[in-house]
Length: 92
Image (cartoon, rainbow, N blue to C red):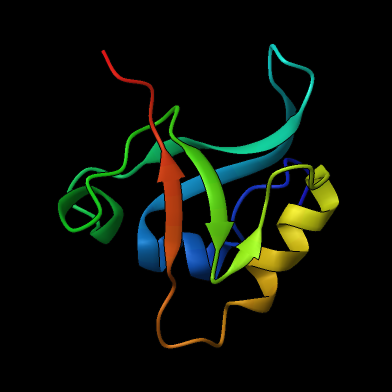
């Protein structure tokens, strides 16, 4: 997959797209949610939004992870019955 987003199966189930290896203003590599499908689990249960930073995916830290590392972490979770995310959102 070219853009390093959530693999199709995982993304379709959760209804979100996560892109890793993005540089923040502080110069750290991070992963961010770039799309959330309206009415999806990510929207209705997780209340996730584009721009949310994903700190952990199933207990694996995404801070400092490259584009490829984030992609692989997400890909490895495909067979899991549940996905746990820790996200950060700016206040305001």
